[in-house]
Length: 417
Ligand code: HAM
Image 1 (tube, rainbow, N blue to C red):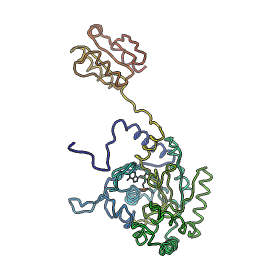
Image 2: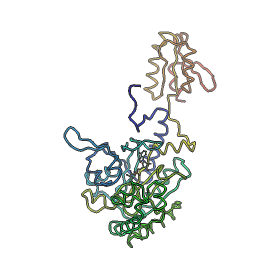
Image 3: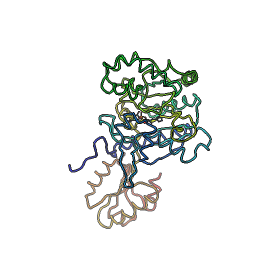
Image 4: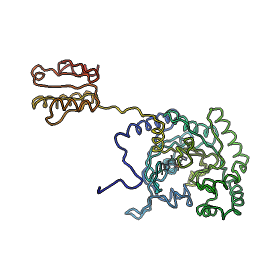
């Protein structure tokens, strides 16, 4: 083969599309239920936007971004996530003047130069919901509820909801100091990645996948024990709202997320038994991000979910997507004159909003009917010499194999019926 899709990318083939359309439809419907409006940002942005928001020391920014210089000498990056572009758009379009919180959602391709494996790609799709301009813990509860309800609406089962609070810029430093203290004496036991995290990004020590590191992380100080009174109260209220909503959350002291903008609430939804590698959705608060990008202090939160991973899990759980509509009618013909009639008839039915697949070439009637059968149409319309003469067609109900003769002028009404 001369050309293949680049490593870590894939074609979404026609037979996969039912899942994709179904998920998009559920995403839009969920948005409508909770009052979110769609925002589509560009595929690429100024590199600094992501470096600034996701964090200079994160894996995403240091190792995974598709960054290049355009012909005008600007540093451009294909979006490695969807939150920063939404915040940029919020600021650029003066959305602070709208009633707050502003609630936005997106469905977007995301680019990360990762090591491809099942459920991890270099181009994947996410949908995400962001609520900007609200600090009420009830909003955190609502966003988490929305994530949970989305998954139940696509009938994905056996999921777990993990929750943590990582504090704010006021209380986080004392927690990070305690973490560093704890890890200082154990640096020799850490994997090389963690040794560098200890210097660059100590919070990430907690979610290392290495088993030895995990054992050390299990006994590490917990962020929830270092929250300032405001963050502690916010976390307490959020847990209360989640209980009120009947959501089965588990506090996970090691949940820290891989992007630097988070404050207070962080959460993930995982398939039961799967680790962070298989996380379906993740999100949290980012109360400082809008200010970081040049706006006024504006508390916000949101989450995003990976569509390929959702489809993988739907298939694993044998959940099928509703079939996509296909043309219900096939038109077959015998001879050149009937073919002309078939061309006109197909066009006229389509203009009347009836989907049609018309035979092509000069195959035998038997071959044409085999094609109709393979296509799974509901009706075959057959035009032969006799029909031409009498101004009729034969309509065959493919399920019952019943046939009847219908005057051409009545065909559309008959089919619609
Ligand atoms: P994230 O956890 O990096 O968060 O990505 C969100 C979801 O995208 C993941 O839970 C996963 O399902 C999917 N995902 C991530 N990387 C890949 C990949 N390489 N291949 C396939 N799927 C992947 C964010 O990006 C944040 N912007 C979420 C957020 C929104 N936080 C607040 N608002």
